[in-house]
Length: 123
Image (cartoon, rainbow, N blue to C red; front, side, top):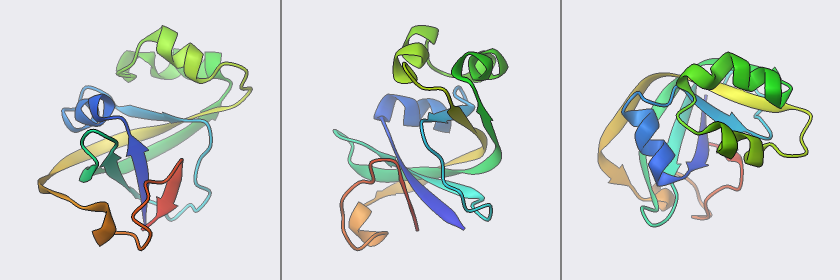
């Protein structure tokens, strides 16, 4: 099963280049059959540009999650702390086998309502 995530272009590029090996989220999909994340790069790109296999999902307090993932976070500690400010739980999706599509795909080809998801949607 696949899930579509909206990711800022700079972080999507880091994922596809192998520099960012964790994608951080405030909420997470609960279907355990999800094994692939499809990457929608938000504006100004506005297209589906690749995918990756889910190697793991880590749930922890933000401070503990940073300790476990900072070596391959692909973001600054300051950005991480701002993103999870006021949260007691945080999630990291482990990135494995990132694959860039040869040609970016229009969102409307994957989902009926061609509106990027706020957090995620199943595809």
